[in-house]
Image (cartoon, rainbow, N blue to C red):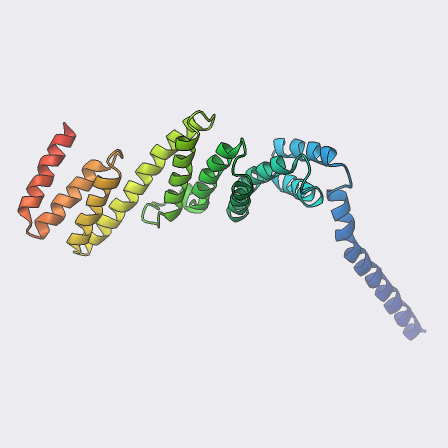
Length: 252
């Protein structure tokens, strides 16, 4: 009797497990249907726009992605691409954002909103260079590779040059100044690294690079100082004296 009860209990448990597995296996499909309902492009876009405006970026990406897949040549196609870029940016998905931007620029070289795409490309490259944990705890990251910063600088410079009347140009100009200082600071960090290791010629050349490429930055005086110190260490006193004179003029 006990054996029969155990067998019956086992069968019930097995049946329950099978039903649970079946329910689990069908849940994602049903969830997908609920996430992206079968609506017209206009209706889906209205939902996506409202979701985006509410700051629900993950959900917005799902809706916009569905529109993009179902109506690739519809009237909302280009706007969907631009909204996807913004949503990816807010989610920190910089790789997907850049891929979407580059594809948009390649396929729509004369689009009226290219200024926005270059602006967003600059912002995305800036975000790609960020590290939230280190920024939060105030870790100095100026010695990191500045490649992304240079690309962001180029993106925003392209915007300012090609679209001077763009609504995004004033903000782009502010960010360009910030990026300029960031790149100059990076070069100085490298110069200091070389100086500490007695690679004085390399240190002087890095300081000279700041002088030649970022003369409008706020790091001109420190660049001249490290050049003078490096030349003195190398015994190149004439060059060091010339740098000192340039620094004195710059301070005035």
